[in-house]
Length: 518
Image (cartoon, rainbow, N blue to C red; front, side):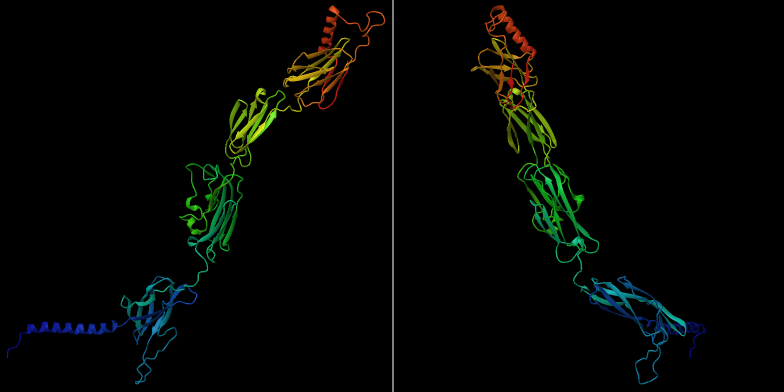
């Protein structure tokens, strides 16, 4: 028999010790690997709620140890009712060997399970997860602490159904749809929120109706703001009425999306436009309202108020007063003033006026024309405040004389003087310093008639009275005898001198009869 040498015994002893140690370690680790939380979840949609409610029930795997919840994390990361510090226990059995089910013995806050709740948005789908940290104790000593991993996390399927699909109570302003009516010529519009729901919260949406002066009944520029009206749809208001005054001339009326800040006060060539802001447009935001095109162009006359007045002067000229300053005058007017062959054109800006002087020699008939203006005709008419001509009369034994003066500043006039069936007509210039004299041989008739055919006056009568010494008797020259020679010339010169000095001065009064005596 061959015996092994002593040195071989030591390695075998070492190997044996290792095997025993490994066995002991495995025997200690096996119970620990079985410790784990047991997490189960259920989900419900409470009636009328827009949230899903998850109920998590937490217990653990060990019957002879207590378990304490150290922490919870959840996915989705929403609030979970408090569970940290809760103690779970599943201890012993009821002592009945025939009973296989464990009996739960609660001590204080200890129990076999803990229930917590978690709320997630009603639109959440897929899986919700709960991860937990827990420690186990026995005899007051901690046996194990661990945190679950994917294999032990609690899971619950939230499904694909949206929770709380209840009829909405309001509509988001960004998604709201509207409908409208529009009466452009009448300057009226309405805008109404589509459906029966108000806008949510403090949201609001303003709309504006505007009218403009326009140069033509079709779209053209420049346009000038005439009137505006803004109102707002908000919580509690689902419909608004808008109304603006429309100018009594060519116009544009627009119903737009927005408040006063969106208004374009002057629409000019190359300037900004409303575009799709007009309700009823093909693009946003105007296409969010259903209804007719929210814009109008029309009118029956130009947005100008040209006017012309004729003001006659005593000298025969006429001042044609042109104006373009009416309420709807927003564009210049070119007037044409015609008086026979005499023509003048004048451009009058909006809100302004001008005057055209027509000379006396052309002022008998004047015609004023302009685009969009009814032709106006007129001519010179003697003003009532012009100074009237002066008439001077003289009578001697052989001659009756009538003189006429025409004040400066008047138009030249004609005078027709009739005595004893004989009529003499003279022209009297304005401002004549010496009277224009008409003489007749003195006869039996004692009156003369004076007519100014260009003046609206009744005929005037002048009464002559011969001197008392005409016809002879008494000493000296025989009254009534004709005066001839140098003496006659002297008498005539004296008569004219008397006329020039204004021996008898009469100022004619309109529409009355005047008797002149010597």
